[in-house]
Length: 206
Ligand code: HEC
Image (tube, rainbow, N blue to C red; front, side, top):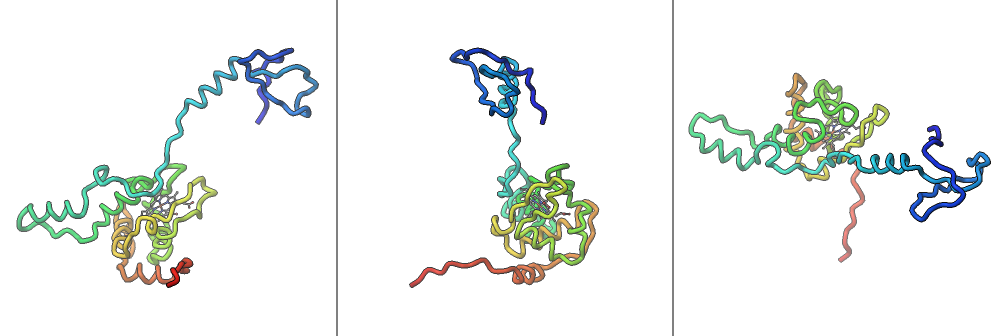
């Protein structure tokens, strides 16, 4: 980054409200006197500080009122809508995806450029072997940092997702947005989780 010397004034002495910049001698280029931020520098800093950084989602479940209905509400709706209403699956992958994944990967599975990768057409999701996909959900992921993506938290573990719920989410990803890969069962998910290194458990002494 170049220096912006023209944003600073050199004064023999500083006034009480002046912002004095303590430049190390090596960088002073022989200047003697006080290096003081000009009005322009002060205005520029005030402007930068007024810009609010957008808070990125942290992977915590979003309130149900934002996307979709709770499983309980859906079951109630299905029961009251009379005979012939299709039985709702017990674990609704679409609703679970909305609560746990959509804030980052978006409802259309296309993610957000520069922040969250697309799940639509993702090699991980299209792989018939669900090992990587399940591991990413349970342990988080940081494999694509060089492409500018952030870190995915261990959403499945943090949100206490059951194997049945993980399977429902995995299958939702595998069958949505044009994706079409092999479905998984809760048993498949359990087997993958069983291969993880167990975290050290602290057992209270009796
Ligand atoms: C807080 C934001 C966030 C949430 C919530 C989140 N992810 Fe991610 N996800 C990411 C980021 C960021 C990456 C890329 C990480 C990297 O590689 O550096 C990623 C990567 C992935 C990948 C790999 C895609 C590829 O092709 O490389 C999959 C699959 C995935 N997420 C699935 C999920 C599922 C399923 C959920 C919900 C259970 C979920 N994510 C929730 C942020 C999130």
